[in-house]
Amino acid sequence: MKSILIGTVLAIFLFPGLLFSQTYEITETDIFGMEKIPRAENVTIYGISFNTSIEAVMKKFRRTESGFRTGARFPFVFKLAPGFDIHSTDKKTIHNLSLDVLFVRWMKGKTTEFFQYKNIDALKEFLTSTLGPPDYVFSSHDLIEMDMFFYLKGYVFLRIRTGLEGREGAQLFLELWPEENIKAKVKEMGLEKIKTPNQ
Image (cartoon, rainbow, N blue to C red; front, side):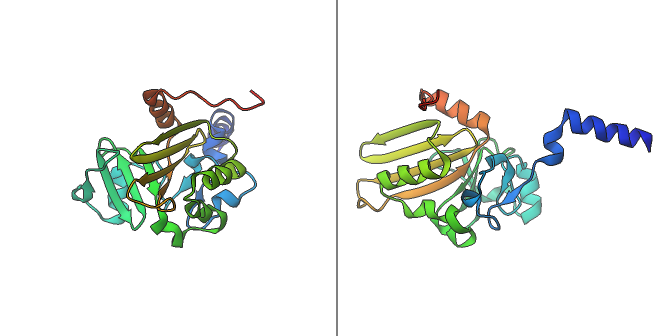
């Protein structure tokens, strides 16, 4: 009994995050409506976080790796449900979780509003008012318009519009990324961190 007590005390001091970090299921909780928006590592989609192994996902949902397809942005993409894709680079670990407008019906409150803002100016205003200024931004407005907003809390917002679509015809994606993957991506893209007035 004494050894269990000592072990618990040590765990509290050495690994407080393991004991007190709460998870929020995006199909049950209005993530962006919360007073303090949690880090993406504490958000799950159907019980899956980006820390879940591909093997665990396959077992939980009784799927096989034959369901992977080649994606435009990642080598391996697995569609787990309408509007919900898992992106991987090795079929072993999750690089990020991606949601599009087809998943809105299973989301709550303000979190669904992101998918309404296909106009780039309205989208920027929504993101800034909801999460504050992004840490990194990428914009390319050639034949294919692409805007990416990176938050080190683990959220990446993506807007894509081809020249064949009208101004309001953009596709929007809400993605959950590990912070280290965001840092690696923005470094690869040569992006510099945006400085806020307080920095």
